[in-house]
Image 1 (cartoon, rainbow, N blue to C red):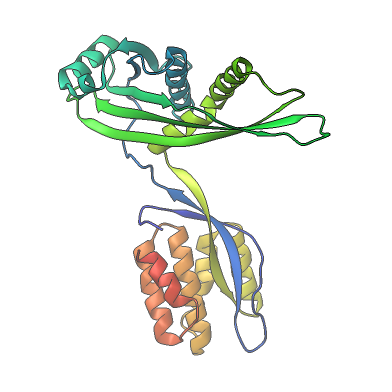
Image 2: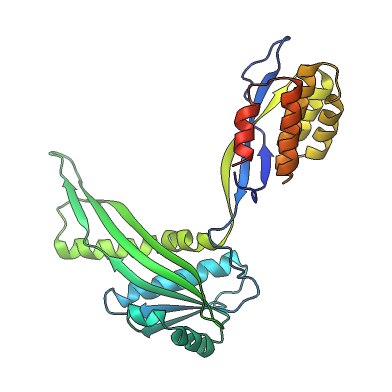
Length: 303
């Protein structure tokens, strides 16, 4: 997990070992906040998206992709529909390297940030017919590779702030009573691609926003009402209360108890975005007693 991630614990009971002479390990699911791939401040900025039409792809497809990206940005930024402007312009890929062109687009659109969608390519579809004797329907499988390029420029300086080259393959299953004619198949492929644009643009715009990934952490569990109270507090995201209980236990004369409490404190610190302090508590845990989970957790924190 990176240093700029924060986590929220979610309860998921799974006692691995629990007996009177040894601490148990209880797993909890966590969701970690992952920083955007491109850390560009979009809030409060006027934004325009330009579709570079070079004749290599259906202009309708390119235009719909631009509109989809604009709509996705508006939703993520909680803006009104139509607040991110969309334009088409004819050019070649080499012209996009001209800073004066970017500045000109910024002036004409009155935008602080300029997105340019270009090099949209849809390769020939690969079609596989699965005809089962006696079956009521024929099944046709379609693979459609596509790629696109999305650049983000500072409208004032023309600095390239982001350079996204996305390549993917769309997969479809088409059911039909009869074998599809080529014209019908081509129509369905285009129709299906346009229907998939929402998913495509969401994956593109995600590059500029944080997201949540699922992970797991472990907590040591010992018998006693105070430990149970701490675990319940942690499961309710009340890490401050849980930390108070574990902090008190770190001064125990029982090395194993103190080590378990220190380990749990490390987890609580990580949950509260205090990773450096979490590492210090792990070091203290190691000094008191060699717990199995400590080394792997330390490696995770210090990546």
